[in-house]
Image (cartoon, rainbow, N blue to C red; front, top):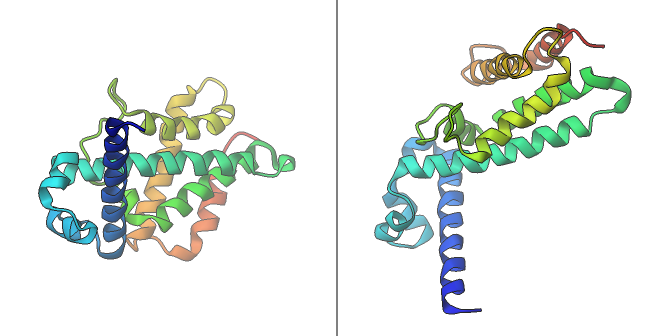
Length: 195
């Protein structure tokens, strides 16, 4: 391995460490606790090293969001593919909805980085990062078959996603009782024009 390759590998490893540490700290104490000073202390590098990777907290939030979007996409695809075949499209959509809400509940700080905080990422634009496009595509792949006659699948996916996001956000904020999550998924999926 050349010196250049080794330096690139070390740089990538440091970047992964910064992102993982920011994510861990945010999950433990919230995003307000994530500062470059605290990150530098935890990873045992100087603040200038952090700034050589990220210009500031906003970019770190963006990196966490991209990592989270890739994880969410994989979980959504896995849940949909793993649904019992006998349950058909309704089973795939139910599994998708549960996986989405479970991800949001298990990873609140990552979910915030993806959808609540400013990570400097563009959504629904030409320069939207691929990981965010993949997250939407993971929803669309399952929902396109249930969007209904005459309904544009992308638009239907946006509305369904907005419903899931609302359920996740309102439940987490204590605005909806947590114990009724399964009933809400049933109601949401039950209104689809599929069997």
